[in-house]
Length: 164
Ligand SMILES: [Zn+2]
Image 1 (tube, rainbow, N blue to C red):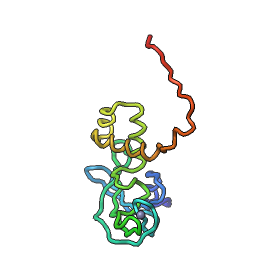
Image 2 (cartoon, rainbow, N blue to C red):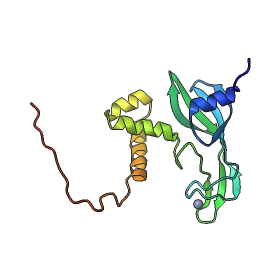
Image 3 (cartoon, rainbow, N blue to C red):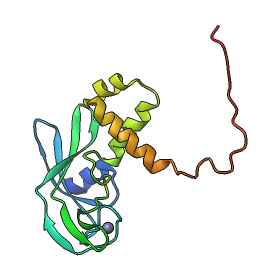
Image 4 (cartoon, rainbow, N blue to C red):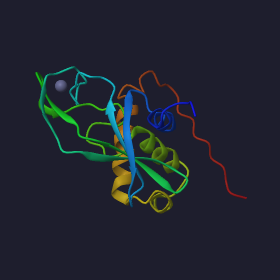
């Protein structure tokens, strides 16, 4: 049967730019997908500039979205780089923020739910704890809200309505 290889199929299911899939295995946690950044030269996790390799950390997991009941995890042994500005740092990976154990897509899901659900519902649905929800939201807010966002603001309107 001709068709895309299993790695390609998995890559399409993950829908994450900039990574390639090496393999996958089912564990008690879910489907652990072995990945690596497509970019050969490692980049500093803080500033994103290419930097010479320093060493390689042990393999670790990032939590991604679930397909049905199966949680997807990304597995990769990140390299450390020696950045001229930031010293020895873990490399930037295209699927997650620096220092996060969750993929960008998972964090987006948490943020979306946080605008619509109470925190304990999110915790129950995603199987994560309160602290994690808070950390993810803080990071996204910091990333998205520019300190200049209120510049040029002249009028703030407040709608008041009474419940019938
Ligand atoms: Zn740097």
